[in-house]
Length: 261
Image 1: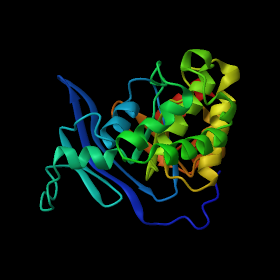
Image 2: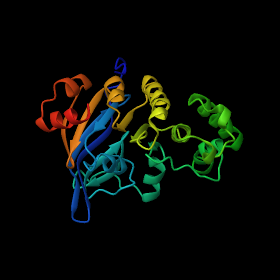
Image 3: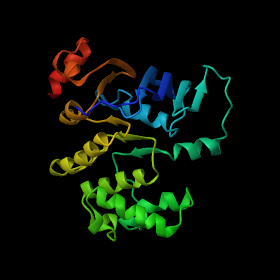
Image 4: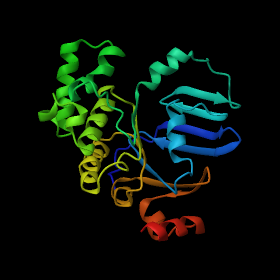
């Protein structure tokens, strides 16, 4: 488990009673979760339980039907809650959400850009960083994820694990307040999973706030400060990794873990 000494108990993510429908299908049913600065929270659960949708709501890729989302003091969504604070324009929300790092199952790299160009496009276009500074930052981040020698390679020339590490570097280039990982290893060949998880472990050790949806239970056991189990659009149970994995309180959690462990 990551070292929680020195973790700031200030809440950086506050989600309250998130409700999300796709048509008539209720995908999130009053989901509430708070995450402290520097905490690593891993969300587990069966496919279709709402895990990925919850992450996408946090960074405004999906709009909620009701509930409240605040990240680092900035209210992203407020439907049916306080509604007393200043309403942000969609442009202000988009600018703020550029500081929420998101790493997807599929790497979503621009195929016509090199690894380095993929990493620096955000800082240059969104943050108006000077190209020389962005290149320096980009090379530092590629070195961090072990890919400095691949700076001029295009995505098609990289393995899936390498592409996902470029995607992580790209997210870090925006100097994110939090990092959201949506099953970042599920599209990878098994032997490439470790290289991505190692980069994520390093980020956790450095104190990055991380919310991770994953099926990698070993990673959850080793790195998470807290594990959240979701099923049918609800949070069924949450607790320390050893509690969830060795002595879950809920029968549904037990059933799920028996099938996959």
